[in-house]
Image (cartoon, rainbow, N blue to C red):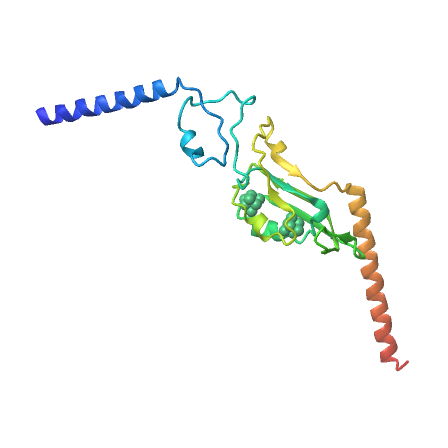
Length: 196
Ligand code: SF4
Ligand code: SF4
């Protein structure tokens, strides 16, 4: 009985000591240290528990995983990022072009339009896989993390700026080109059959 009482007292004083420790520590102002500092992560646990956000912001690591960004000029719409995404939060709709439509900054030829390139950041689990597989390194994690919105839909970021009417036009042009190619192929086969 005496033993369990001693354990109880020890636990109570242990808890009280911890509470007081944090109470006095919280009176100290948090130091806004550089993320490159050796003791950055230790410092985060010292001083006040909050900062005066947004006028004060804690520095974040350059290689941190935060808001995704897609540089569409460098995107070849290969769909690899969407395929690797474990939670299917990247939605891409590609349209084949009738000819090469340009080059990315690393010299890769672009042959597809992105009629749609949406990323649902509410679903994203920030694994970074999409940034690893991208052949042109155009999808990247930025250091932006403050994306508070009032509507969930607003967390779906739309990177394609293609107008639906233009997308329809591009689809029609490609279909027409394919139909012409098919007709030419059939005509050539017919000629061959007739021995011409
Ligand atoms: S970071 Fe991961 S979960 Fe988020 S979009 Fe990329 S692959 Fe998907
Ligand atoms: S992997 Fe890169 S190039 Fe391919 S669709 Fe995604 S962002 Fe575009």
